[in-house]
Image (cartoon, rainbow, N blue to C red; front, side, top):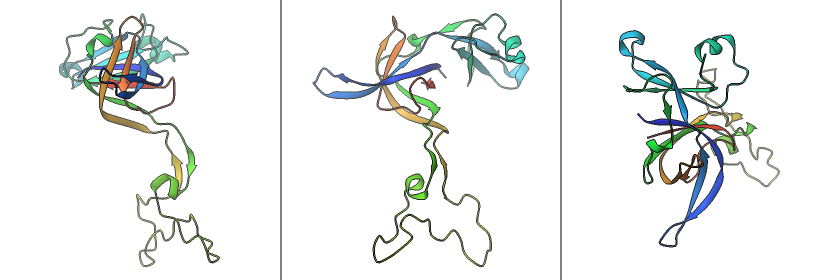
Length: 196
């Protein structure tokens, strides 16, 4: 599997040759470095670990693992590879028109109620009703407990999300930027994983 760590810049739009306007998200992806290659013989499975970003405030374990490599963010991609530790991967692994998946941490929206978080219907709004946005019953009386997985109020967002089926619209190897059609998870400057 081909993959690359990138950072979100912002959203924009591209005008296509037929005059249509396509919304795109621009990402910047400096060359990633292979930090470890795992094999089935040694580790029990085959994978490659890639890193990106400048090393900053690494703990002692990370300092030993990344001795001569100046990277901070790490990501593991499963599958066989011919790459070696220290090899660099850049945007040339992708081509315009490729369909990719983008994984990131969604924007946090804080503590949200059931209407915003799960799309529950509101209660009656008139005639003195006092349960406009209340969740209502949360379970049967006979069972005398709340079943696991019950949709209720709570922290919304700030969780890993993968958006699939996105099209690569443009690649600029000089500036290490890539334009992906549509929106991708996360806030500006957040880390994302692009997979082919």
